[in-house]
Image (tube, rainbow, N blue to C red; front, side, top):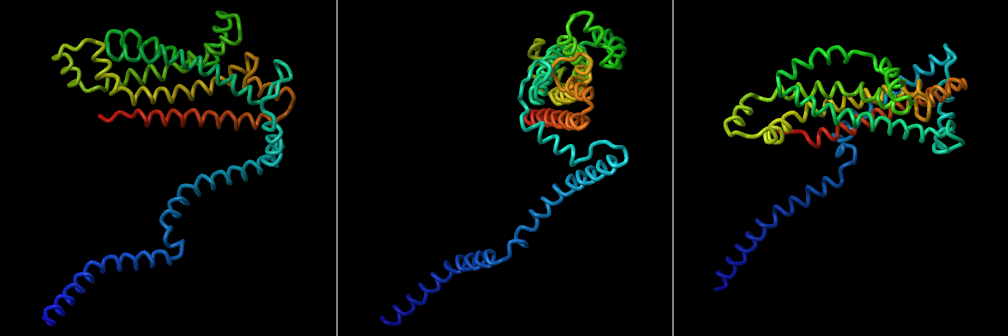
Length: 299
């Protein structure tokens, strides 16, 4: 009887050791991992971060050095002087001392408002028209020479037409944005419609789908990437044009601010405005990139 009990205890100890071994090994591995230095543990993440950060940082440093060198040779304000002026400009960006003397924040908002109106009208007309000329061959052939003729016209060439028709600077600037930004949306949307596989349209014809069903179920999902590319190109054109249009029409806006600072021979503020235009344009484009990724069609 004692021998049987002894054998039972031996077997139980083996069973417990078999189950406890993995836990002991895991605990030992965790202890070793915990005692490792931080650098070897996070080396892959640090290397990936350095590959992502170092190239643009190096490019910015080289740009600032080149800017400083050019400023010493040409007399332009250098990085340090421009930075000091920027601190003053952005210290109170929303001051108002009259209709023609406002902070840079108000000028940016007024420019964005004009771009939003002109770009919105262009999207409202250009995208549906792009679907139509891509869908109907006769309409495509009819509009092709008009688009080819008007698309290469310089945006500022449309400004006198706007001033003559609308008699005011504000709608004339919006007109220039509209007519300049409509073409990428028309062309890209039309190209997207023509790239839809013919098999999809044949199935729709067999199923006797009406035109709205063809548009909503087949054309729109397939054309969406092309359409969003056209929208991205158009917003870049619209933001590029607004500064030049405002320089000629006056009022409140970044273009007018640049021209006013030039009349005051304040070159530092002109350089600041250039950076503001670039940063705002970059933010607008990146916002549309995020929208494009959000609505990316998976065929």
